[in-house]
Image (cartoon, rainbow, N blue to C red; front, side):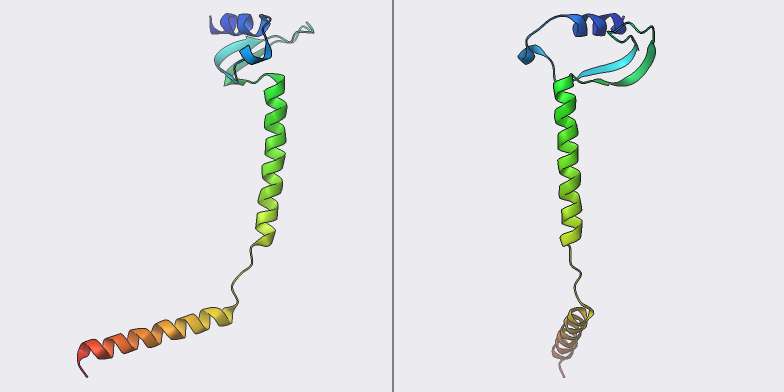
Length: 103
């Protein structure tokens, strides 16, 4: 029944603003429009209109490029910075212990 509803929804002519961003598919039978005789049983997923599919693909490419540039720009802190920070924290802790012990 859902496959029939999906087929009707996809086959109806409508304006671009009427096309939903995505149609969730629980189970259905997909038959290509060019009638090649190939049918595909679909169990779970979503139908995206071609415009939305292209926009999603472009967004994925943009996000992957941004992710790669962020990974390249990450610089690690040199070991000497960690050494100095450890010495300062150790000295501060020692000073606080001495003050709190009353010596």
